[in-house]
Length: 391
Image (tube, rainbow, N blue to C red):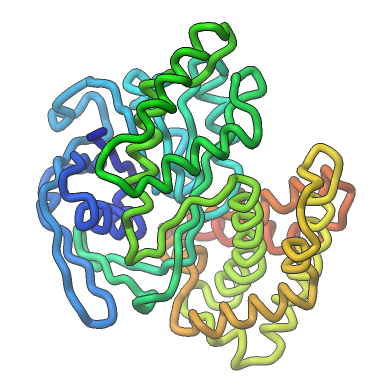
């Protein structure tokens, strides 16, 4: 089995590591952490008052100069759950261990990291790793290293994954690539029915000089998707990339409409319920929803984007529909404090550039109004700068 390395063992990273180990006990799993000294060999996860533990991890430093980095062997499968603001710098020391046969999986808030990585670290299309992107509403927080509280009730929440399609120079195009991914995910026998698929891919590759994914890379992709979709307690599933992109854009709108408001109004002391308890809170959220809805509908229907989005899929981005769904999300997470509010409270850099900042970028490219997003963006930036004086 392909060894999986996980970079970013915060709350979501710890939750993911625990579920990967429980559901894929024979898959080698290495946790890449900044300070391996004292990091526990056992992870404890608590959900609905029930505690479970997992062991069998290898621990390495994400710093190549550390005594705890035991090898310089290539990393085949890398799952990244660091904060968006840290990702480019966090991956840089690992670049010598990543290659075209590697698979990088990103599960983070906001959008724009994938684009940032390929423009900074992976500019050569032919040598670029494959990418899997994910989105999730699962909530979690850690009390200490290796101890995570899963706040999403059992049976609720999900993780949706999508494989970034190969570059246009690949011999894979559209449907053929999605069919291949589907064949990986729908494996239901003990034999390896993908062998013929991989053999055919390899044969085709020999005849096609523009190939960008080798057989070894496809095996890593298959093994990674298999491990990810086994996490049934997290309702983890792979969907077509265009559907994944829509899900990520919707979550972007939720985060852009809720997170900065709770951070600005409460500096980390207000739970989401305050937005419903005080009527004007929801009114402020809805003003952001109006703006985000206009931007995302134009983005999804503009030339250069897929024009195959169905009316049903597009309808979830309509203003009234988004307002109602986001209100329900606020209600179901009423006891939560948003990550951006916590960052402001703890005087840390926020992910505003990858949330409202990304929404502003889309809006300006499309000629849409972005004044409200810009206002909350500027306010968060101001609060971040003012916090620096108090550290």
